[in-house]
Every structure is written in C-alpha cells, then in structure tokens.
Length: 432
Ligand SMILES: *Cc1c(COP(=O)(O)O)cnc(C)c1O
Image (tube, rainbow, N blue to C red; front, side):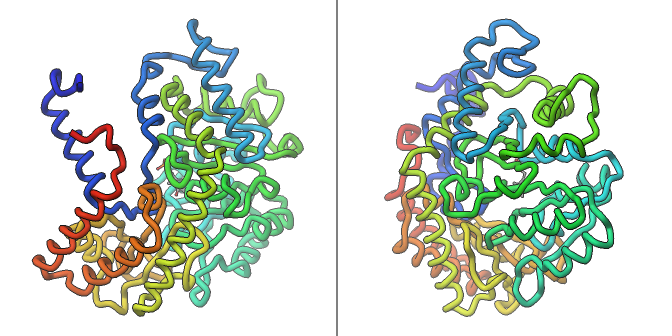
C-alpha cells in the first residue's frame, strides 16, 4: 500500500518511473550505488521529524534520547570500520564534509594543493566555481601524461615553491590507488596538513581492498553513498595522533579545547544547523552492513569486475587512462574512436546504460563535450553481476559506441539489457 499513491498521484507516477529506470537499465556511473531496503526504510522513517542541533548528550533540543543512540551507534561503527579515533557523521554531503575539514585547518586565503578537476579531482578541491577555489588559494597538481598517475615530481616542486598549509589527495575520476604514503612524505617536508578525500574508494578502504589513509592523514573525508553503499551523505574522520596537530591549528573560537571539538563545531554551528537524523540512523545501518563479511566479498567483486572490464576494453583497443584500474573506476579516452564523451553518454543512454561523460587528462574539449567517459562497477556488482555479465556489458558499450547514430541498433541493445536486468532485480518489494 502506498500513501503517495492516494495523496499525490502525480509524484507517485514520477517515483514509479524512477523505480523502473533503476530496475531496467544498467547503472554504470562510478559514483552511484543501490542501498539496501533496510537503509531505504530508515532514510524514509520518522527520524526526519526530529530537531537535534548539537551532538549526542549536548543537544539544543529536548526529546533527543533515541536519536542520540542512533548517532552514537553510527559513530562507533564508523570508528570500528575505518579504525579511526574520531568520527563526525553529520555532514549532509561529501562537499559539506570537505568544507568543514578545510575550514577547520585553514584560514581564508591560505594556500592548498589539490588535484586538477580535469585530471580527476573534485569541485571542492579548488575549482573557481566552488567555495574552495573562492575562499582559498588552491594550486593544482596533475597526473603525468605517460602514466596517467599523480606526477609526484610536480607535487614536490609545487609544495616547495608554494609552501601550502594543506594538501588534498583523492579525486572523482582517479582509477588507481590514492598514494597516501607518498603524499604524507611531501606534506611532512613542507609542514603541511594532509587531507585525504576518499569519497570514491571509501567502501573499498573499509573492506581492506584499497590502502587506508588513516595512518597518513591529519583528516579524512568521505561520502557515504558511493562504494560505501549507504544513504546520501558525508563523514569526517581522524586517526590516532590527530590531537598532535592542535598546536598548528588556530582555534576559531575560544570555546574549543582540541581538534575534535574544533571539527565538531565547524560542522555545527559552523556550516550546518539541524542534522538529518533519519540519514544518520541510515548511515549507522550502512556501517553495520559494511562491517559484515559479505561486504568484503562485495568490494572484492567490485574491483574484480572493474579489472576484468578494463582488460576487455584494452582488447578492443580502448585507451584507458593509466592503462587500467586498481579500483571500481575506469576512465576511457575515446579520441581514437571518433566519438566525444557527450555523444557516447547519449548513445549509451539510448541503449539502456547510464555513464557520465568525463574530461580526460590534457583534454582539448570543454567539460560540456569532453573526450572521455567514466565507467564504474559498484552498482552492477550490488545487483549481483559478475564476469559473465561484465563481458556482455563491454560488448554492448562497444556496439553502442561504434553504432552511435544507429537508433535501431541502440534500441535492440536496450531490449537485451532490459531482459538481463529482469534477472537481477534490485528492490523486488517495490515492484508493482
Ligand atoms: C563525490 C565526491 C565529493 C562530494 O560529494 P557530494 O556528496 O556530491 O557533495 C567530494 N569529493 C570527491 C572526491 C567526490 O568524488
């Protein structure tokens, strides 16, 4: 029984069209995933009604005894998952987590190093259309043209020359392991803080199939909805010796006594008001799921699927940035295939596959056209797909790229994909 169906048929049919889209197409956007039905239930639950500004035990509102339990559980599970000492589960999104982390460690105008957006970075790593590029003096580092990996000669040079107060590592379209140890070495040479943004690989880190940033970074941020497979949101973590950074951080308020209090207060009241308690409780469920052995199997399969996919693309003469992947992300330069990223995204969309166009390093096309696409395996792996399906998917992608102007062909692929998707239902309880 649906309440929406009776009270708002208009939204009911929009919701159903979205359910059908998710069920009947192949989700290959590297930053997307499908949460469990339990997480959906909690995210749609009554905790959305509760105001709880503050932190467990120190709220500005009454009636917080149960949401306090949920937030404490979320923090404890998150600490167990990443083996960290400090956790804040309140950021509404990955961008909010980054804003709070940057505002904790920096003053406006401070110099920061971050990976260039067109080389795989993120808007919050210094883009001029984002608060990060407007508030701070971000200097971009890049990947090397030959290897497609971070150019540490350049990172070292930039660090020596600009003496950044903080270095951000991590990105949105970086297919390889983030080089935490190497970044920390550079940071130590110039006395900079290291911030690891693991928004993309955090699920892989939690499962132990990607190195952990915890022993190398002064602060770690992430989303909860990408490979971590939770509800849409953000988190901030710190490892074991974070309080040693206190002497170098200028307190923004006389009320705080240490770094953890400073991060807490930068999140709320600094940049947010009331926390989304329904989402925080849903994050707790997600962290609980990620602590179970099945999640490790999932993460291993996600990476195996991506590596197998990369091998098949290479056989078909696709040009992969960095020549492959260590993670769930594949970045393809389509320049040798006579198609732009934009055309490929549209063509694959007609064929029932969702990807995003993406700039490739040293791209000569604009961000609205691009020369590449980014492909990811987290969502199809959640559906239970393995090698056999990945092989079909690569051939469908290749066909759709080679026949991008042949609507009949694309429609035929879409029919095949619809029938594959029927064998891998996501939310059977939502079928109607
Ligand atoms: C996705 C992402 C973010 C931001 O997450 P939102 O929840 O979309 O704000 C931040 N950093 C990186 C590297 C990301 O990939």
